[in-house]
Image (cartoon, rainbow, N blue to C red; front, side, top):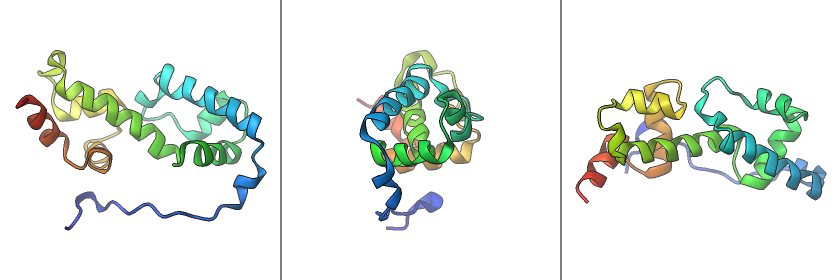
Length: 139
């Protein structure tokens, strides 16, 4: 089946940096990443970057990237998009947001534009946001 949005399959890479990560430091950083990205809802800010996260956590971007890859099994963009998609999926089925357009929901969840919203949503959920909403409204 032809996949829309030009989504590439995930490939496993042999990354030498993983051996350089100290477990206890990575565990602490893991908790702090979750606090900033999830608890503080920084994923809602489309301008919030891995570089800014590293600065906020007082670490360097390369080490942060290595920890995200080793602890979350994905890169920074995928991590924030995962939380954005969860938020958008919730809004799509929540009656409080029925008057919002797809673009407004995508923007409220932290996506910079409609295309990135649709692509990330499809990658995570396997269907477009409007299909997801329609399917959940039928239940």
